[in-house]
Image (cartoon, rainbow, N blue to C red):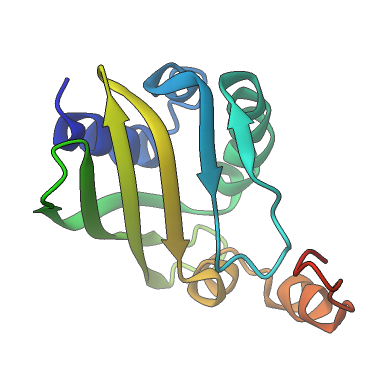
Amino acid sequence: MTPEEVFRKLVSGVAAGQYAELPDLYAEQTDVRHPMSPYGAPPLLSREALREHFTGTGPQVAATVHFEAADIVVHQTADPEVIVGEFAYAGVAPATGERFRVPCVFVLRVRDGEIVESRDYVDHVAMAKARGRLEELIAALREPVAADGAS
C-alpha cells in the first residue's frame, strides 16, 4: 500500500472501531508519538505497544462517541515515504446528541506498506469535550510536568 492508502485505512479504521486490525498497519518496530497530548503519552515503539494502546483506548472512546474521518486532505512531500494527512473526526456524542468536530494532522512515514514513524496531532480539548471528559483533561493539566516534558 502507498503511504496515502495506509493513512486512509488507519483513520477510517479508527472511526469504524476496527481496533484489532490497526496494529497490523505498523511495522514491528515503529515510533508513534502524540506530541500535543496533555496526558503525557509515552512514545509507542512497537506493534505490540500499539496493540495495547488500541485495545485499551479504542473501546473507551467508542463507548462515548461515534464518529467518522471527514474532510481528508493528503499532502505529498519531497520524501516519497512521508505524507501529511489533515482531517477531522466528526460525529455525535451519544450521551448528549451534540455534534462535534476534532481537527487532526498526522505526519506519517510509511515504508514497505507499514507505518514506521508517526506524529499524531489531535485537538485533545475538542475530543475531551465530545467524550464528556473535560474535568479529566483539566485534572491532567493540573499535574506537575517533569523536566523531560512527561507528566
